[in-house]
Image 1 (spheres, one colour):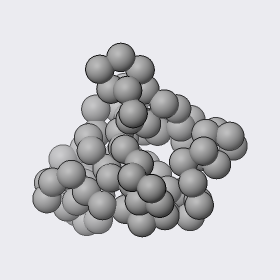
Image 2: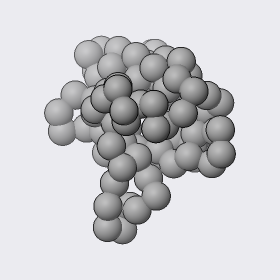
Image 3: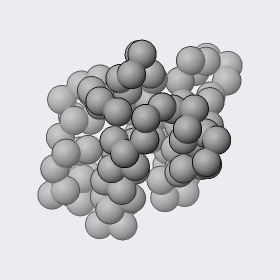
Length: 92
């Protein structure tokens, strides 16, 4: 799948391991980049949900329409889908 980013900060964290290491530490950085690679490898978000890749799940409430995959507890990578494109929104 194609990946876009909500802002430059998220893009730098998700594409540059050194920046991610500084922000979140080496374990979290490795997990972020692993999840990004998994998202790129699948064809649809539904496939991620069906096969529980990264414990992918739809969010509810004020985050309806967004999805999340688990990182290191308590962090999650939150994204939205637009057709065949995913926009990485937050690391919560």
